[in-house]
Image 1 (spheres, rainbow, N blue to C red):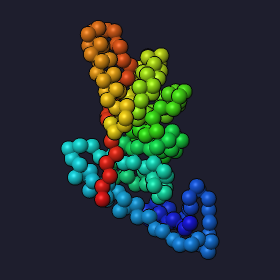
Image 2: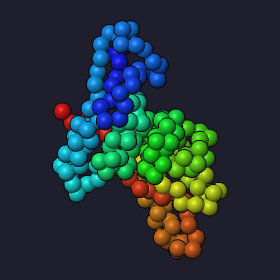
Image 3: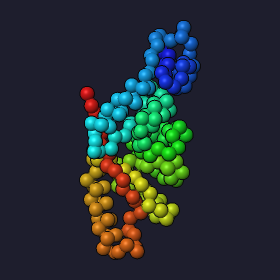
Image 4: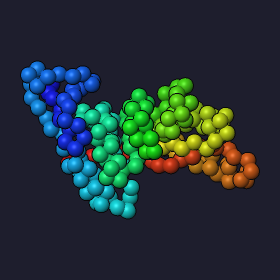
Length: 193
């Protein structure tokens, strides 16, 4: 356990789980350079072009502090973020009211209304999640955005289902929508050395 000082954001010590400890209690000190994090994201954005570059800030931004890291990245131009859990999406929405937020954990049963209120998109990983999200969107009378996890055992079935539903919608005409899902992106984890 150690003290974290966030350069460019805060000089107050914070610790994991937002508990405060003194320098004397800490086994070490770690300085987080938010400017370097933002510069690294800008470098990745340049290398990824013309593809979009987003940021994964799950697990409290990998222990570096979700809110300060996300704000630094947003300051560098990042507007799309991935978190693991809906609770992290709540924290991120409070910090960045206009950001696009995707939740990697998918759509837990009964959580669709919370996603809608947060303006967060689930990363769908099963047909059950796809069906629940689609049913919720139809009941709400909206086309709600979502992503499909592209490296998942159910991916082929989801893509086939989307293809069939899109084909059915096209066949029935624009007046009668078959699928309320608005598919925005496919997600795959990419690790860099």
